[in-house]
Image (cartoon, rainbow, N blue to C red; front, side, top):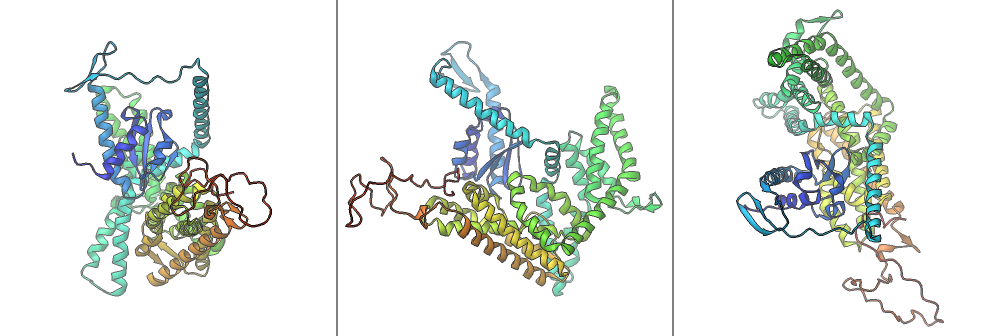
Length: 558
């Protein structure tokens, strides 16, 4: 079988997460490989972070390995194949009854199994200390996960899991809708634009069905039943139903109604299975699930979800038109921490609701400014740490993704390990968000017809109250503001280990410890250096700690 870079990455990751036997589930989002692990103590996180393709890890409800856009979609199937083959081999392996017996795996017979390397015995001082440190580390990680595993946070993640699989379709349809809008404004290809409108709008017209399907799947129901009850919302015949004196409209309640309907259907299905006899289950349970949930959806959920949807649109419009600068400052400044925690996906239902209701989401261009601040901060780090070749290489490789709005490579590879540059990147995002919010207060609202891309990739998706060109100009101004403030704040306040007015990474008089390689072109320090000036000799200073390239502990900041 031909080895590709993506299969090699998958093969390198698998043993570092405990092998195939330790992997209970595999999934991915736009940038992260999300793994369910039976025992997280088996993960070699230090070696995992050291892999060239790994941009970072997040130890959350699932173990998340940041690989970046595009890469994660190609590595995941390779990883799933390795996990499946590893599980098959484990089932085919015959464990020898006595030590030294041949180990058989399928048709392959190997020689004597090598003796396992014994860990330090617990009775020894080394073994006791190692066991104590391992237990302490496991306790700290478990306590951190418990603090993060609040009911609200877990619910938000599960809701995000419903919408994340929809993002590729939202992106594709949004790009087509943007192109179609441009052709309509220019008056070009009038015979083609109706076809493009149909292609772009077909998915959005039935998005409630997909949301219902994924909701039931996420919460433990039968996916097709979730799609069936959610389909009631978009059925044209609901226009003949009157609720509280008001005639329903197809699609009323949108994705929020579909989410609620499928969630209710899941609980109805589970309730039915607790009392329906097995012989009647295939007939009674689906019927009652669709019937009861469908009636509640028509006579309650569609009306309530429709009111909630309208309130979300009104609130978003009011927020930016009335408190635009302040709202942009807060939203743009806090979005990077949400990305770091993986909670940004919880905003997808809001974006989707606004796109359904208004044709675009006014929140995404503001939130996209966080990526601009991140790019500006990374550029400042690149300029200041001129001699840190490892970090500069990381920035060069992650910068194209950052310019396209994918901030995780720069977050986990650059700003977060350094510490303070992460905060200055947030300041850049806040400034860019305030810029966009200012124009919203002046009546020039801009939005995105789809979710997923940001940065430069958002330009084809822009729409607004005054058309494409003014919207693009405002968005470009916000990006430039984010770049400039993120760069300036990081350059002057990033605290790059400044000693005596000189960046520590740029000093050439730092004495390396014995056995440390000296960079090319730098004179190797000697134990008996000659005085630098003719004045009286003085006591030598203690050697400075050498600069470690791209260390994960933020050693470049004070």
